[in-house]
Length: 112
Image (cartoon, rainbow, N blue to C red):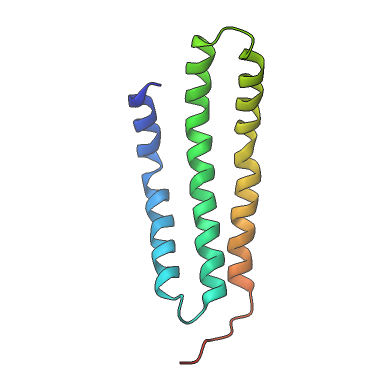
């Protein structure tokens, strides 16, 4: 894999990754007051992070693997990579669903 290509692609997404990290930290800090909302937000932001990593790295891996693959397993590996390229669509949906559930869920404050 060309690490310089991966690094440059990830570098442009750094502000988004930092935003998600801030969201996760804020959700952890507010966990005591709104645990269900915080869990939903943490999971949603983490799923979006994983989705973006998959969406950015799979095309780079795909090109590298296609160049080096030969043999009977080529078709199955390529099929797996093609399905993996579709995973971010589903993961984005799940991540945003979790975030929306967290935003609009009933907030029952935990009394101390």
